[in-house]
Length: 186
Image (cartoon, rainbow, N blue to C red; front, top):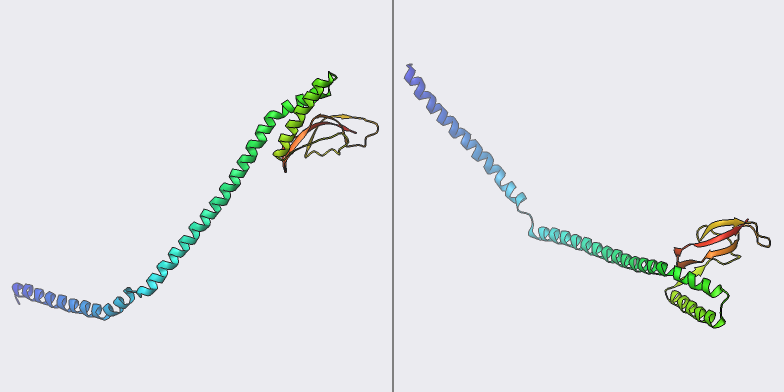
């Protein structure tokens, strides 16, 4: 064989091999194509059920988030209201203290009576906001409500009781607006 014959025979062999490979590929593809089509095409009803389930789940989550948001904002609104009332009342408490001290002074009865009425009106306003004073002489000292600034050896008082009140404490429900400043007996 000459050199030219080898070249011509080789291309023919390559063409034949390529056709055989192409036939194998087509043959393999022909076998797998029907099974792929059946797996690729899902049941439309199942797909819709899946979408409905996902949408329902998202709806429930959004609804739960919204309800949580509403309750949280309601609590925040109530807390903000109580904080505002407490801070406003706290700003006016020194005025109340001054009026109460003025009533205790020995002055003209008419003037004392007028100041007493003002103190009464002020106390009524505090009651409307559910604000109650605390810290009376003879009460048991409680560090949760009272601020002891002095101690004394008072006769007639049991130990750990309030001997003198320098300024009343005020509470709005469970919230302390101002602690009572007191002297405690030993």
